[in-house]
Structures are given as C-alpha cells and as structure tokens.
Image 1 (cartoon, rainbow, N blue to C red):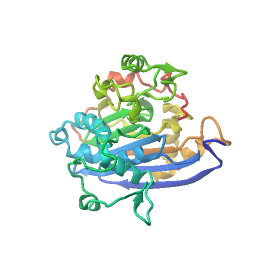
Image 2 (image 1 turned 90 degrees about the horizontal axis):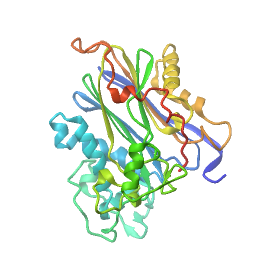
Image 3 (image 1 turned 90 degrees about the vertical axis):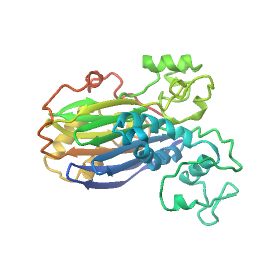
Image 4 (image 1 turned 30 degrees about the vertical axis):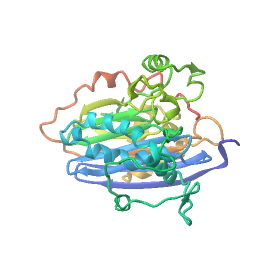
Length: 362
C-alpha cells in the first residue's frame, strides 16, 4: 500500500470554542495516510481583542507542522509590528522566523522532540540526553538564543509544512498563507478565496524558482515538491546570494486584509486534503446547509471529512484532513461598512479558480 494504510483511520480530534465576537469548531483526521502530519492552532484570545487560527499541512514528517502550531502565533504576539498594530508585517516576519528558529542545536532538538524521536523513558534523542530549559518547562517564549551542542551546525529540516493563518481583530481580518492550504470566507453565501494555492506552475512562483537556480519537472519543484512555498524544506533554501523571500521555495507568505461586514457569515481554513475534493463554493454551500440544522461547528467539520473520504486508497480523498470553521457573531460594529467589494486580489480568486482541485502527493 506504500504511503497508505489498508483501511483509513477515521477517528477525529475535534474542539469547539467561542467568545463574545465569534465561535469556532475544528477537527482533524488521519484518513488513509500512514501517518498524521497536519497540525493546527486556535487561540480565541491571542490578546483581549484578537483571535488567531492556523492550519499547518506537513510533508516529509510532522515535526515542522507541529513546530509551527507551537511557535508561530507566539512569535506574532511578541513581534514589535504586532505591538504597533501592523498585523500583516508581524505575520510575514513570523513566517520567515520559523525557518530561522529551526536552525542549529536548539532547532534540531525541538524538532526531534516534536517528531517523536525522543525516547520518553530514557530521555534520549538519537544518543543525546535531552533536558528542557526552565523557560520551556513553563511554556514561555524566550529570545530563542543559540545553543552549543553536537548539532550546532544543523542547517534546518528537509521536511516542511504549509501555513495558512487568519487573525481577527475587531472587524479586521488578516490572512497569511504559504503553500496550498486555503482560507475562504462566505459573504452572503458567495465563496471568496482569501489565499492563493502556491503551485509551482503559477507564473510568479515559476519565475522565482528559475531565478533561484531551481527547475520544474512534472509540475514539481526540482521534480520533488508539489508546492512552491512552505516553512522548512531547507534543501530548497541554500542559495546564499539571495534573501529568504527569493529562494527556490520560500516561507514568505501572501498577505490579504479584509474589513468584515454584516454580510460575512463564516470563515474556513483547511488543508488541501479538503480542497482536492471540494471547490471553495461547494464547501461554502455545504456548510451553509449544515448550519441550518447543526449548531456544533466541529461536527460540521467532521461531516466534511466523511463526505471527502475516499472509499479506497489512492487518489483524491486519501490525504490527512484538517479544517477550522469560524462563525462570526452579530451584530458587528455599527460603524462597519456593509457589503463592500473584497480586495481585488481576492476577487480574482473566486471558487472557479483554475487551481482548485489540483491534487498533491508528497
């Protein structure tokens, strides 16, 4: 069966939450894949006025996606741009910071722990004793200072992860995306894509790949990776003469900012295991129908997985599946505008986007 199981794992890990501004449900399911490499983060109250949601679709292992789920929102929160109210810049810098943090002895050690390469009884990682620092034991973010050790020259992981993140502050929605997970908003029942699937054959991606010394073969970067942006994948980021934003594969995200209005109903962030099987509009229609009779949002996510799951191994519907559904509570700020056009970048990414439905095998 190769990378597939003889029968799918259909158990779901789900959660729900709400505050005075919104409610969310999320779920994840391993499915036919031999391992679960997705991760997610949901922080209703990143601060008193801000919520954070992120989906991370790992490839080549789960360590990078779990690293992002653990650290990316913390980096956003502590960044000086966030403190100044610039959410987009804090997101962009935090995406790139993930690659920097995974270098050296400390990055190697953290990835080993998150990738379950530590013996939980002996405390050994591939022959080296692991001892957590007090700051980590207290679950705090420190300055991530460099450490000396046997892997001080570690150049980062060759595994990687997509990252699709949404921050909601009052009526402002900011979406950052690197990879082919996707964020979609429903406005009066119409699906609007707030992220772009970063496939190698897109002109802007192809241009960067070629200029950085890479190539595209059978739709894959260097004949290997079927997406053009990701956190991790350091083997594609070795051109020392170019900045991080211009590497063959980059973690640099696209940023989309939207002012929410009365017509906005819900937001979906999901990995490509969902989008391989349903278009943006199909998913919005399905959720809209489910909301008429089902109030628990995680249950709706679970039903989407069951709908997408393939009857047999191979092809669409066999990937890991992770989805976060965020429903906006009414009323909005009375000063907020009513149904304005979404940004032109989003209008060009409607549910008839030709990139929808493209499959990925990593």
